[in-house]
Image 1: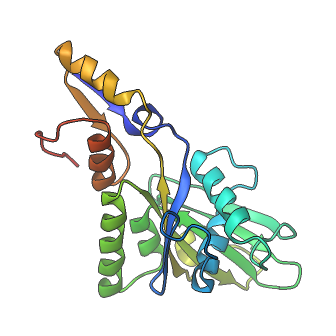
Image 2 (image 1 turned 45 degrees about the vertical axis):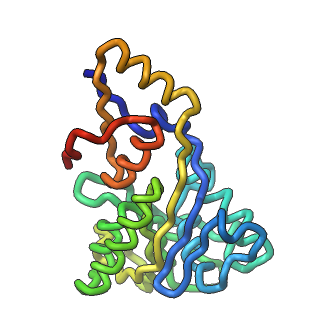
Length: 228
């Protein structure tokens, strides 16, 4: 049995933002090519960029930065003049990260968070019907093979920052769906493994529906059950 990771092994680890979804609008890169990003989604992408490192080293953050430069060009939603005050990194307890910014023309701090959708839903203290609607959209995007992140925003007026991200009053902005293409030689490699009597198992930290979609693209049979 050969156990393989998905991202960067079956896939190229070369991501692009394929879809932006909020409760008001949706943008799909393939369907909306050549169209301007809807105004209702500007805040979602703006805060996805703010929740990422300016000098991105992670492929997801690089893809978000590139989407921001392309889709928000000429708007007031890119903030090179803002100052980073602090950040809250990912942890075992909270699969989301937040970055705290100071705008030169505002006293309040502005907080941008991104992470696993369920973690963002938790940070926003979302009511059950809204949380169920977001979860359904995450499943839909994952079935299309997209890696899905949630994005939220908060404003904080006090000088001293809280210890935990949960102490901010976050507002849910939406979901970012990233596409990572399967490597062109993967199907042949998996076929060779099968001919050699090797069973291939995909292991991933992504949503199970994302893993299933990529496994299909890679030519893996789905006779065995998915274990979460």
